[in-house]
Amino acid sequence: MKTVIALLFTFIGFSSYAQANLDDYKYIIVPKKFDAFKNVNEHQTSTLVKFLFTGKGFTTVYDDQLPEDLKFNRCLGVVADLQDDSSMFSTKTIINLIDCNDNVVFSTMKGISKKKQYKEAYSEAIRESMRSFNGMNYTYSAKNEKEGPVTVNFKNDVKKLDESKAAAILKTEKAKEEETATKRTAVISEQTEQTQYFNDRTPVTSNIKKAAPVTPVLKNVEVNKPVVQDIWYAQATETGYQLVDSSPKIRMTLMKSSADNVFMAKTDTKNGMVYQNEGKWVFEYYENDKLVQKELNIKF
Image (cartoon, rainbow, N blue to C red; front, side, top):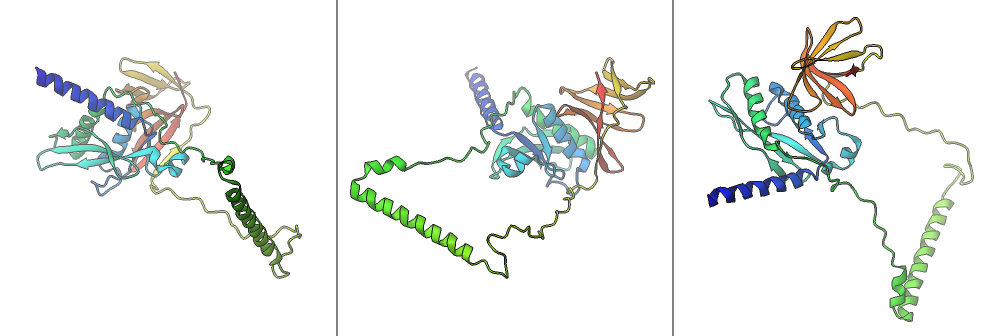
């Protein structure tokens, strides 16, 4: 009995420690190609990991779609790395979260599946690994946000020195100021007719050209904006909702998942998922090996 209680307290302590660690990070970064695989989103592992982290309440982004603050401060996020320990008879996965210093800050339990089809096996194993985040009330603490510059003022420190030392310091500072002013004057005097006059205000033609737009790393991602008039109305069903247009015609079926605002979606020709991102509903699915993200106009 004492052993069981000790193990229980150890588990609770570890969960609290992991919670505190993950609260320090604003983003979960999901690679579109894990190191364990040869192809992008092989067996749909990347989309599944992103989908599950989003369902757990984390702000999840792909590695080639980083927001501006994460681009300038890489330590705001951790990378979700899929560790594949599969054997001949079973598929085994662990998800490691790695910070900007290549330190593993969290590792999930090992998910195991004995299914024969790769896609089904990895799906079951990854979902099993993600159970490690159940009950974790994640809240970003903003600990890794960059702080503003610190200004240090030594003005009053001169009062602590005797007069001779204070005079010497002031003389040195004055000499530095005069030297800086002399350098600035020298730079101005170097202007010649071959360059331009210092007082000439005539605009100089710039040779700076507008940079060409950067093409995303993953070229087969297509984002479609909704037509304003194309409004779909949500009607509740036993398993979720059906979306109908104004005719009315059923355009899509939504089935509830274990996460809020995340649904498994199905049309007559496509299967995917619908989730809410920054107040907008997005239908994400694959079409001819191309990941498509289509924005929907849904009225609940």
